[in-house]
Image (cartoon, rainbow, N blue to C red; front, side, top):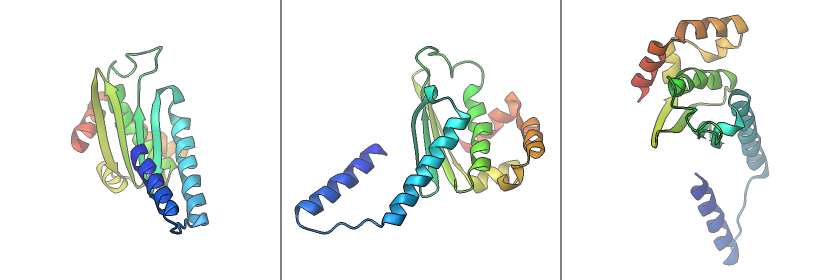
Length: 161
């Protein structure tokens, strides 16, 4: 993702050096920056910044790359921590961020990258919910209680991998 951004900047610089005009819609650029900042803030409300490697958001698509903190190198290797992030924390992100339409998450575990790609509609269908209806605290707690077991989290990951 960073490489693509850098390539875009290089192209714009090259066009400017040739005397070409490069126009960026100010409102669109500000809106995109606001959405990225909002997404990052939402992600940091759920996850400790110490486990976040990279967070990006563009056109309704979020990307999160995790890494184990230096003080706890086996943070993601115990139990089904990765499955919980993929199954329940992704649902929380979709619930909290209505503009989030799709989400990619990757976690390095024991030298192997575990990744998942999720579409809002597919996850809503899987859980038979509308995430906008889960903003009520009781509804959210009921949703978590119904879906928070090792077996259910594993089934979710198996379904979307």
